[in-house]
Image 1 (cartoon, rainbow, N blue to C red):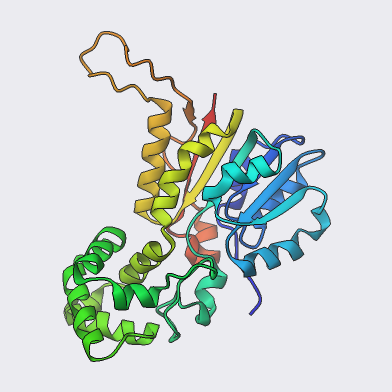
Image 2: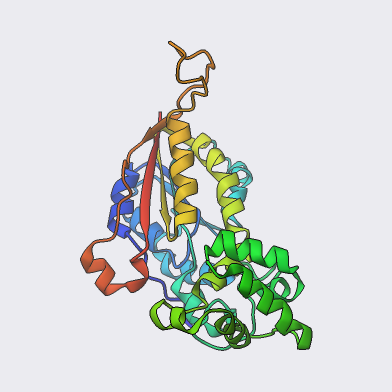
Length: 310
């Protein structure tokens, strides 16, 4: 299957990066190379390091960016390894970093990857197929309490307890191997009247399992401080999120780096000595235009936040 992915909030992100023709930029979620392609068009002596953990994305981006071979270095890795990747490339600071979080259209539409509740395939959901943990192992191996926790916390599903209970009951009879089987179990756990008015009953649970499988929120939390540290003065970090959990992490971390003071509010002056590392450019997140949402329905939940280093 051909790798296809439409970059969300493309113009807004490129504008937000404030690109310098001789700058060094990092695309931490390279995907099909849409953002990197636009950055390269604006560079003269500058350079982009593109990072992705998905082999199909690496191949597709390599093809798309052939015209800019002298400007792009593609690395198969996770953006959490950014510090060591830059050390290997003999780069100390970057002028801009992009993260476009979530799942690519290719991953969702390619049934054999097991991300989608819309088609029946083996449960997988790995963004990096070199890793051993799969969605199948989570569904069949986690305890009822662990399943409840991830569906509640990562899926924010009000029926998390019942879904976890139904999964454990179903797998006692036979292991749950496919997305179709998991769909049926989830459907049975949600009242019919709720199913009739809500979206797809599996949406939240599939999101939760995918986040757990790929450690998406942990990786994001653990990486943001390093990314801000790696920015040059006036360098910018642009992050596109697709659900409230990611957005909350980014918003909180940006605010903390803009105002890190931990002194009690009644203190007349700051004595903690913690210094601001930059400023939040986006007081409110940038959202897709009506036109973009009509052209690409998957952009509807996207939010862009931008932080600038001082």
